Length: 372
Image (tube, rainbow, N blue to C red; front, side, top):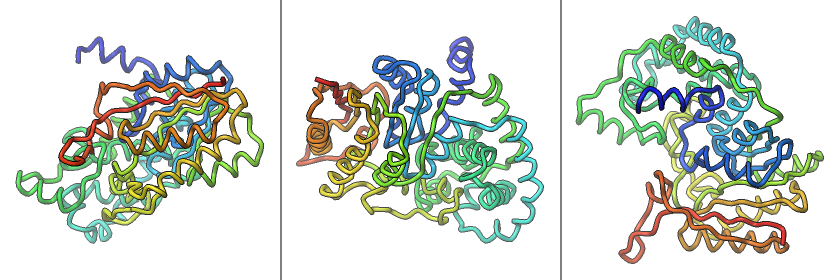
């Protein structure tokens, strides 16, 4: 990329914070900006019950709209919450220094970590991460949440850009696969000063300042449950429901984020989660129930004339099920379908499978429901 293009792309605070959070299935920011601009006015409310890393919420807030979102995966929640209301750069750097001061308390714990962590992170990084894992109160502290979000971004990725040995940034691969891959290539954990590394990344992130937005809220938990609780409190109705539910049988957000979930307090290993809420949604009845329960709960938070915009999977079962649920729950709205060509890697391109010897067609479909 030419320097002028790079400067233009990251020339504002919003542009530097919008991309916080490597995550599958996120909306491209330009796409989200366009949908929200076309279907809402400034000051109106945008609702996303499957918020992911908060692209919809961030886009709405950056364009003067209010936003409400729900996310079941703590990784996505931390990204979204931190982007909507980041701490000051001074507070973040001070907290990094505090963590550095206590990291040596974790010498024994760092030695006791499973073999994967020794091959992935150098000794100083392991100690620092353990201190962050124990000390950062990301649920309640704005500063701690911002530090954690930035740590999660750089926890693993390409050599030189992350705290780890060579890894994919978006997906946490299994420990066994990573160990075998590193061993075959004679890769070892890079020697990194974690505080100096993170301080440099934070200064780049804050170089244009921190975004300051109108009201934007995101809640951690099961959307179907949390939506009803928030609606019962009496909130301003949303004029746009804009979301992308998880696709049936494609990827497992908890398994694929296991290393980041470890940093948030989870177990030090990768485990499949097939519970139907945060697993691969491989049970058709549970998948249909998930969509129905969430969209039904979301309906109570919408204005009567609200627009519903849902991006879903092009494959038959996911598309057919999503259409049926939306038609049933919003019978007074007119549905328009837009088939979207792939312009960047998507879930279905990355994880597509074969059926009867034929490769399933990747891609997305947009379902737009407007008042008749």
